[in-house]
Length: 132
Image (cartoon, rainbow, N blue to C red):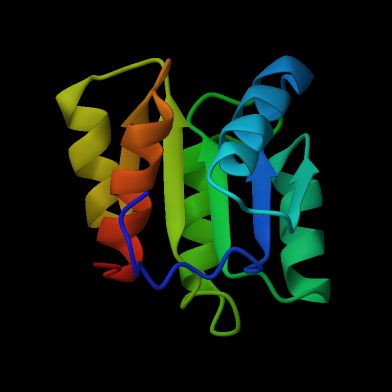
């Protein structure tokens, strides 16, 4: 990490993915950057309930999930006046340009293709939060 970068490693992060192994990988990647306040949910419906009951500073969602897709969860977050301000980072193993464009139009803050390096996550976070 660069010197003097004002990263808030205590910020509250919610990771939403229907695969436990993927959640663990993302969780560990955040931990490598020093983040220590990370939580998880395994579907979009549970994530929405959680988001409405607790304050989160960032939501990391998978594009492809059963029950509720990442795109649908993003739309639900953006439609809720109490949640729409929360930055959303979408993770996918799919780099289809039309998906990225559609998600960006729906209010996505950043998109990251899996698998990704710690440095890539750090760069996306810098972009989302304007950390320098």
